[in-house]
Length: 274
Ligand code: MG
Image 1 (tube, rainbow, N blue to C red):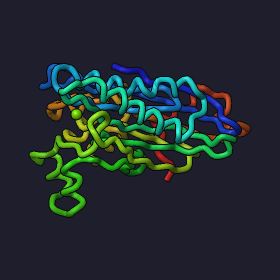
Image 2 (image 1 turned 60 degrees about the vertical axis):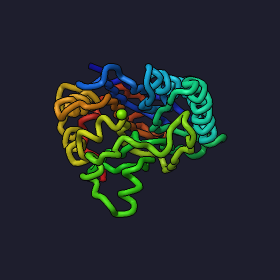
Image 3 (image 1 turned 60 degrees about the horizontal axis):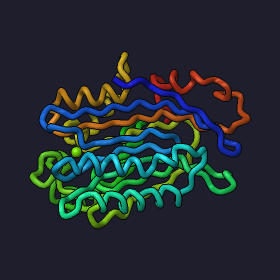
């Protein structure tokens, strides 16, 4: 069981207080856990490896490893993140020889301009792991690169059918196997914002409404642990990995939150401001 970890830092005139919980489980069916995750502020990600003969877990681990150095910086740029995606792709391509070794990637980073005047969240994904914003509702910020997403886009199947479709495990982009072009979104960082990163082992077991209900129903477990347990109870057919972020971004001069390291932990049970 993972604890909730709190972080706080300042970039320019902005203060970020963040609590993070993470959890991963092999599930009930797979022999090994091929998922990886990284919580290295200001960068957070999940990666879901694919390929036989342990290439999958090496691919997801290598994907996460490509971002570790960014976790040693208080300020990273959009280009820093994109460079790490390229580096992950380069390294994973070398793993498999003639075997498939690939990985999905879904992450979020707190990015700053060179003069730190503007702070934004950057989401990035390749494949069918996901980034959600968690508030009054659960909003998927990433776009799946998958065969079923293409069917959904054409209106040929419903979201419910997508979760059980025979091609539900087919991704159309992946790190290390051809097209690793990331989907990216940028939006302002400010106030209280919460996010969920997850591998498809969560979203193939639980629909969005169920995930939201579990997040909103706080108990002694961390949010990430609650979700992984629920996915296991729902079947656990795949590896399951979840990272939940709870962030408060304020101007460094404001008295609110400024010197209170317990704030982000307390905020875990706070209702979203909508
Ligand atoms: Mg998976």
